[in-house]
Amino acid sequence: MTENRPAKPQTGRHNLDPHLERYAARTTGMTASEIRALFAVASRPEVVSLAGGMPNLAALPLDTLSAQVGEIIAEEGLVALQYGSAHGVPALRDQICEIMALEGIKAHPDDVVVTVGSQMGLDMVTRLFCDPGDVVIAEGPSYVGALGSFAAYQAKVVHVAMDDQGLVPEGLREALQQAEKAGQRVKFLYTIPNFHNPAGVTLAVERRAEIVEICREHGVLIVEDNPYGLLGFDGQTYPALRSLDPDNVVYLGSFSKTFASGLRVGWVLAPHAVREKLVLAAESATLCPPTFNQMIVSRYLATHDWKGQIKKFRENYRERRDAMLSALQQHLPPGCSWTHPDGGFYVWVTVPEGVDTKAMLPRAVTARVAYASGTGFYADGFGSRQMRLSYCYPTPERIREGVRRLAAVLESEMDL
Ligand code: PMP
Image (spheres, rainbow, N blue to C red):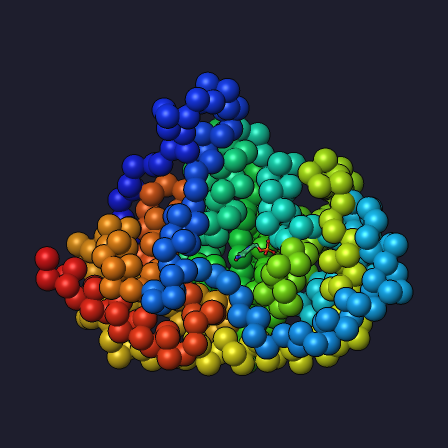
C-alpha cells in the first residue's frame, strides 16, 4: 500500500473557545474524525454514502427481538433494570467464551470483561498501558476510533505497512528495532487481523505465529481487535492471535457487527493478570455495562439461531462487496488500485499521483457521493492518495451508482 507525504495535523482547539486555557494537555490530541465531520452531509438522501461503517441491520428478526425484550422485562425486569457488576453478566460471559472458541480461543469467563462496545475496550486498554509519549505500533492505515483513543492518552503511533496478506512481519521487526534504538517505550501492537478496517485485507495464517513470536521477543503486548472475524464471506474463520499466545494478547470482541451495534455490547478478553485492572478501569468509566442490553444479547444467543443470522448478514455483505468490486473494475480510471476483501465492510482504494482524496471530497459530495479520505486513518497525515469505500450499508444498486459518480469525479480531477 503506497503512502505519501503528511498533511498538517489538525488541532482540536480554536481560539474562539473561552475554555481554551482550562483544558487538560491530553485534549490537544482530541480532534473530530474526518468521518464524523462528514456524517451530516453524507447522510443526505441524495448522496450515496460510501463513507460510514454502519452495519446493515435489515435482516434482524425484529419481531422475535421485540418479544424477547418483553419477556426479559416480565420475567427478570428488576434485575435487568438494576446496576450490575463491572465485569459483566455471568451468563453472557460464558456465551462469549463459546463464540471465541470458533476462532480457536480457549478462555475462562472470569477473564472476559463486558464493555460498552469494543470502543470502550480500546479506550480502557490504552488507559491501562499508555503514558504520554509511549509508542503504540499499529497497521498503516488503522481504525480511526483506535487512533482517537491513542491520541486521547497522548500515545505516539508508529505505523507499519500492510500488503495484501496483512501486516508485514519484517516491517514490524524493523519498527520495533528502531523504537528500541531511539529509547522509546513500545507498549503494544494494535492490530486488526481479519477483514481490516479500513484496508479490507486479512492477515495470512502463516504470518500469525511469526507476529506473535516477534512481539514476544521484543516484550511487546498485542492488542487484537476483531469485530469482523465471523463475517468472512465463505464462512471461513482464522485462528486468533490470542489462541496462539494467550498470556501476551488482549483480545477485543464486539456484538456490533454480528448482532446490533446500538446495544453497545462488546468485550475484552485479557490475560488473567490484566483482568483485575481492567475491571477497575471499567468501574471508574461506567460503573457497569448496561445490564438490560447484556441480557438482550444473552437471551438472543440462547434462543435464536445466531449463527444462521450471521450467515444472513454475510450473504448480504457479500452481495454488496461483489457489487462494489465489479463497479470499481468497470468504472475507475486507469492508475487506481484497490484491495479485495474476503469479509467485513471495506475496500481501500489508492488513486493516481496528483489526486488528493481529502481535497477532492467536497467535489465528490457535490457530485452526490461520499467516501472517507485516507488521511483520517493515519496518525501522521499519510494517506492523501487513499480512500476507504464502505459497501456495508447501501443497496447494490446505490453502490454501483456511487462508484459511477466517484469515477466521474476522479476523472475530472485527473484532467486538472
Ligand atoms: N474496532 C474496529 C476495527 C471497528 O471497525 C469498530 C467499529 N467500526 C470498533 C472497533 C468499535 O466497535 P464497537 O464499539 O461498536 O464494538
